[in-house]
View 1 (cartoon, chains in turn blue, yellow):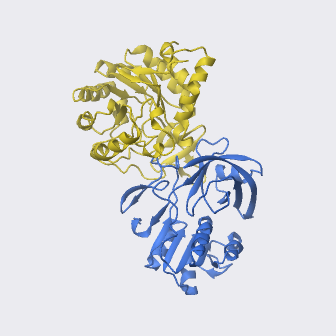
View 2: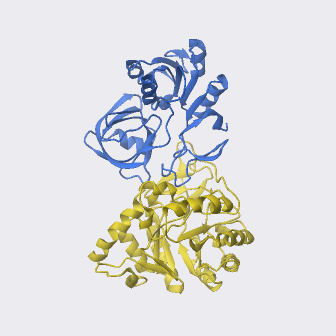
View 3: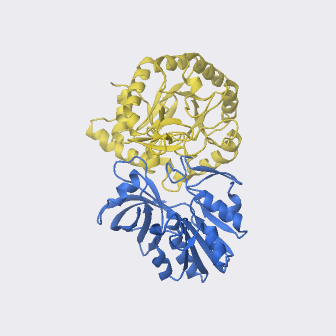
Length: 243
Length: 302
């Protein structure tokens, strides 16, 4: 963990209530880690997963859901944010696999971008399966495609891509998957693990206090006992999760 | 040169700043980011006889200038604390520590304290009779003078170490509880624990915290803490550790003027992991600004 003062270089709406903020001056982050932002007027910091890190520039894709993300959405280039960086364990992209499927539900797609880059750099085939309620919510499709990942969309209302859930899209597309990385709502990840026996790393979400392992605010039950989502996670292997 | 040292009874501290129990784990995570030996002491995560998972999540709710927590005394149990956590802490912190103990019955408090009594690095036993997040325990002892005295006497009987009782602010008259503990043999008092609070998610029409209620702490509770420390310090002879909403060197001095011999920093650690370090570094300049040469001179001066 490091405390850094980062500078906003851009902040824009991607679609609906999904925004993308880029910040300069950030120490190297790995896929699946998160940062914790101090926002004016709020007591606790706000944890946001790393979407991308490139040469000191941190990209955060976030969904406006409350006061914290609302404040973020109104920030402009040049503003500074006191940030705790490189929090959490992150995805292990060094695992043996030839064809990785990255499954994102809603804003859970965000942390999969840096992961896709890491896996592609290791010569893996990467297929992203992104699930949304409706087609208007789809974001980062071109971004994933630009780095060489396949991108499959599932929407619950069928307005874009496959009609149904990510599990339907995986089945219908017949995509080969020998390793799964996922981030999204628990029901999605549960269905995913029920649909395939492939090894999987899952990124969990929980309301956090500190974000660095001291307050026990975000504890979850695992097969290896009580774990802190912020410090021991947020990424867990599928066999550790107690559904 | 100003003197920032202080003492709690016979325990000498190089400075009055102590991270409060539950906001610093067992120190290991914090040792990754700064040298813990700058601290006056550390009050370790509240320990119970048995391991506890704690309460369901969400356990945390943001509030104006503070937060509500409902962790529910998650800890690995006294055996693991003694065999794993304390030896690990010893490697990164070389000063006397404060062991915070909680329980659900008088014999359980006594049992846990009797085990921790054997730990050399523990200088003070801090007995938490004020946790608002567990049923039939914790705060139940801290809201009744008779029960508070009973726990105090039972713990005193099993240890030769100084015993500080951590008091709840969720009472009508904190002085009567404090006096009951002092009369039962307490060597000191820590106050305040969190204030019982609640938030409601108006969109979902349900409590934010899974356990509905939780303990409110953070900068917002500082005036309540100063008032209670002042009341108790003037009514009791034993030393007081002031706790509640402390975030700056100025807060430390204010708390000591109210009567605290040392000061615990709690919720602020969660938002600023360097809070204790920042406060310790800022203390000398703040003392000079106020014309204070020794912190010991200002304890209970108001």
